[in-house]
Image (cartoon, rainbow, N blue to C red; front, side, top):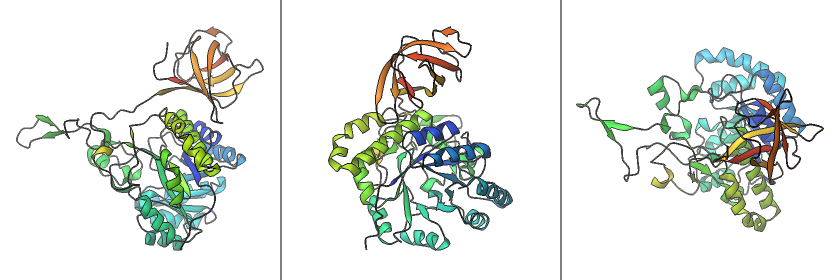
Length: 416
């Protein structure tokens, strides 16, 4: 049986805020997934008010980009009445799909807004084609595969489900230590439930062993003498394996990262957009540009890379033992939201830079243009030598006229 769907896979990108949603849309997403102020699994993210959601959906739809809203907590009784009200509100702003893991939440969504597609979250532990068929019979349009599946297993699922049913799989971003993200560590250590959106990421903490009869004496946990971050997975990155992902029959390539910056989202979205487009133009063009993809993806924050479970079970090389910190090869300076009649770029400052610096304009079309900062002015028109205050609105005169939505970035070691 060949149930593979035709056409390019969807590129699905996360957004933590309205600014990041617009960035995702401009830099190549086919769809964006966001969370509201309740019922999603990223409670620590900024998330969207209902008004921001409505604005974001309108912006995305104007660019023919879809928006999916997460409501993927594992609900308790006390959540259900609020979920009814929440879905009633979502019904009025018309997202393209709801991402749900809990059967109770699924039933409420079907009752309240049957016209909105339902996608089954990876939190539901979707590891076999019978699970897919179960959700398909309940009315789900799409199921997100468990991250623990290999490409061979996903291929088997594709061969045993309806051609009209969609498979969504994570192809880039942080990996969770627990099976399908169902973690109890956060609840145990801090009382904050990861399965209800309040994960404190204890898998990134540094651990030691304490012997029962020697309280207060801490012994380091060593694995091959490389350190003590025993739960700390490398990040998933499949930029070099787009052909294999396509061949497996995946319909939606999902990026992890609903707490990431606009620079991260722009960088990942643009790189995968180009990789997908290049591959569908010709595999030769895709292969020829592998080094560019690698270089660009390395400008995002990351913890070193792995291919996860896609080519077999991970081994000791998929963990990082000596640090929990990110590698950060680029610094986000701001996104240009207006170019005035003088050709000056208006932006909200994210990190400090100075007049005289050479910075890079990251453009949605894939170009990176190096420019010099000739002058800067605050909102009162006063000249400034640098921009040390976060979120300050400034105007910059650059050596080349920029465009709206260009992202300004620089190397991690800035000259000022």
